Image (cartoon, rainbow, N blue to C red):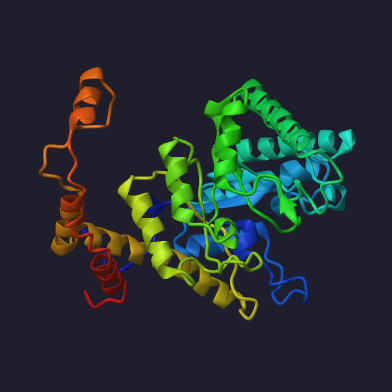
Length: 390
């Protein structure tokens, strides 16, 4: 294995950014734009300059919501050419079902049947755009699928409506032959007080109830799990173990804050390390998508610093993960805490004979307690490595 020492992004790393990330103009709930508008084609050129591999988009990041068919075709054709000329791919597309006021009560789960129908139409047209650009992943984030008061609808009705919508979109995907995978993205709150599918685990429970569960996975986002104080890497691991990690959104976030979308690794460095280590250990082959924003203080040179920083931090942590896995003392501790020399019966798979052996085995609890579990040392070795003194 060759460990890089330049931390320069390459296509093999599959780093991608959304048009809405590097193109974010710095507007927030309390202040107006601080950066000038960049066209999608200018954003693609910027990403190519920084060494990114891919660009992702909502439908209306590229095509205005009220564009005519001819305008839509011209815009998509020009963008596709710009991507090809710059060597940038479009691995993922998504749909905005949260920005326009028509979605004030949700989209797929809205009480108004006309809103639900429009949401499906808009999503199908966004899938058309994604397919034309070569996207094989389609993310669904239900930003308005929630409530401020549960008086507005029964929560199980909302789940049924969501299921009907995803089933409909799967059939459209099959009928059109797009070959897309859907990645469902959870978030606990904001912009709604409560969003129905608050965690990745809830979506993992929802997916088996669909007509085509093989077509649907998840898109966990660092900030969204951290907002609720959860361990993001654990959510990613569960999704991976279930075969449902179709996409991932990388950023950073302080717990119990508004959705910050900070530069990857800029807030919780050790948590970012465990996440990168997990993705690399399991050979995750999907995009590493940075769904984050530069500080509002920055101009576009600062936005480039932000984007380069996301990729650089990931690559540094990737190298640290390789070193952690090869460290002799760490390996010794891992072997020590996992070994047993007392002839304990195997319990990985049930058998009648194995169960009988287990029932007759005499466990010496006092002797078991003598075994050290040096997690303080193991954690400090990790900290030393991250701080560059090991």
